[in-house]
Every structure is written in structure tokens, then in C-alpha cells.
Image (cartoon, rainbow, N blue to C red; front, side, top):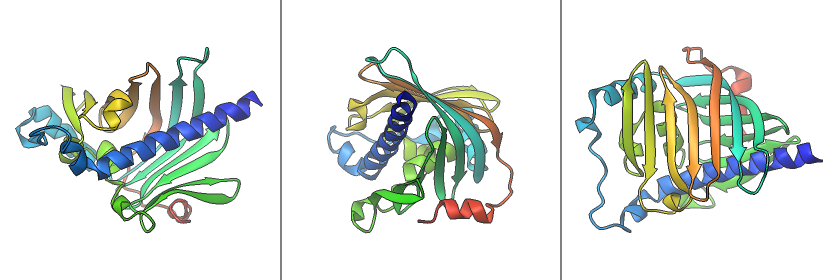
Length: 229
């Protein structure tokens, strides 16, 4: 029973993070209206190393990896642990398959966020029913493809390192996102290999990516089916 509840918490948290980032990215114009003269950062005037990392990440059209997630909730003595597979396609979207402790798959495309579990597909958010969600996969593609222009519309960026080893701290600009997250830290080299989500309430999540494959091998038929409902 405890294993089942832990799995459910891991899935629900992942859904929450995905949907929240989607909402904020889509409503970035409304968000900027909350602060006087808030302007996107001119990425082209940034550190030359950041621009090099951005260019390097943009070359990763398809990323396959295993992931491990540790979620620490203040009211719980032990962290919630989960693991599974991750697939990113700059054309199709993102596919998160939690394999332990409870199987579930969360998919993010340009048209919807949906979950596959027990042979069923559950739509979490859909563009045709909520027109403002059109193109909501942008923020996720930005995280993994190095689109600093898109990220800078929602976050203040702090960068250190170079193309071989770097850290990028994303501090949410005043918005619903800043009420939940203090900052989101990405680190890596040729690809993003870790994400740390630091929440305002003291909770945090660590995501690490292992066995990462950024080769040019196209999606298999099975992988293409991941993004179908």
C-alpha cells in the first residue's frame, strides 16, 4: 500500500510540475504585465559560454535516457523515490515513463498533456478544449533544447561554467511560478543531466538523467506511438 501511494504521489507531482510550467509559459505575456517595464533578457548579449551551451543543446534533436527522481516533502520523513525512462523529441514533445514504484507515462506535446496508465489514456490538458494551450510545449522544449530566448521571457538566467560542464539557474519572474518555485537549476555538459527544483515551501526535487543517448537515430515506430492517444 505504501509503495502504491508513493507511486501516486510521484506521478501527481510530475503532472503538477509539467502543467504549471506549461501554464506560465503560455501566459508569459500576462505575467510580464504584473511588473512594470519587465523585459525579456537580451540573450545575445550574454556570456559567450552560455551561447555556446545553447547552440550545443540545440543540436540534440532527440534525447533518450533513464531518469531518477527524488522528491523531498517537508512533512514526510523519507523522500519519494521514482525512476523510469525519458524521451525528448524537438518535433514530437516529451515522454516521461515512470517505472518504479508505480508504472505511469506522462506525455507533453504541442497539443496536450496526457497520462497513460493501466492501458488507458487520461487527458490532463488539451488545446482544442482550451485554445490558450496552443503551443504549450514550448517551455519544455526550451529546457532541453537550450532555447534561451524563450526561457528568458519567464525566468531570470544565471549561468556559470562552459560547454564541458555548466550550471544554469532559472529564477522565476514574478508570476504564479514564482509563488511555487524559488529557482530551478539545470546542469550538464553536452546535454542536461540534472535538474533541481527548489520550492518556496522548502520542498525540493532532484532529477538526474543517466545512460543519455543524443544520437541522430530517428524515433522507432514504438517511440512514435508514445505520442499518440
